[in-house]
Image 1 (tube, one colour):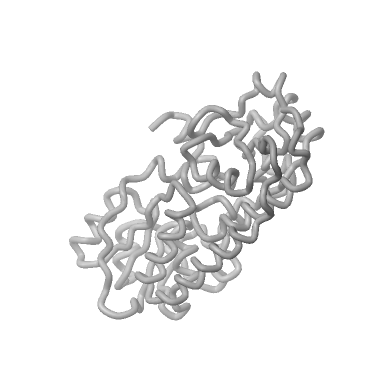
Image 2 (cartoon, rainbow, N blue to C red):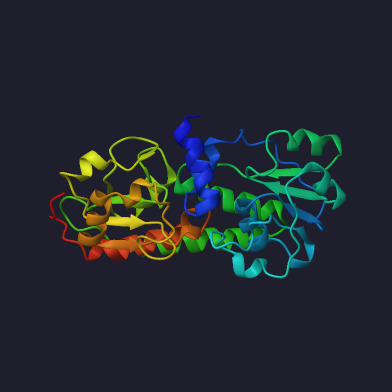
Length: 294
């Protein structure tokens, strides 16, 4: 894993803006799902990506603990997390809660799964989807593991309906969007954010695959049609003073180009809530000239 990807992961937790795919780059492969017999009664979630699924599909009374980030601004289900207990994703703390199911994306690190297996505690490992179809499949799979298969199918069907209802793209070149975070990172082909832009009918201004720093040199002579800013407090909120997002070239783009303010919680993990970001981007796309020059 590249040094930049690791920096992006730290920025995601500190700044609450990077999508789950950054976290995926620093995590191990999904483990085998071990389902308890009957609906789980004592569920422990180890990270805020897992929190979203547990809060959405598990019975509230069955949640023994969420991660310490469950109520943070980058947690989509933060309102539902209020009042529920939290626990650090450390082996001893988890074992003390006597869970009958642990749900994780990256929480606890790679060693926590075999440790819990030795204790006979089943673990549901959330995958790291690369496409919207894979996100949909994860919704159905996790809902089933948490004892709510019908609700999972309803959520997946709602995703389908909302995506089908997006305004169709006009003829001609699709407007180019630049995804931007306060950490000065953007996203190219091969990431879930890239798929989000495409689903909204936008082209990705970033022409390098994966996660990279904002292309400052290119931005000096080329312009995106729209900026997708995953910032919480407006286009320049919560930006580190050393971030490329504070560079004069970038600030000029933010002042001159249409900006779509995306809630960090919409793209912080791969879940059904990505559709919120897609809808916001699709609405902005309809207001941008299809023939605009970059």
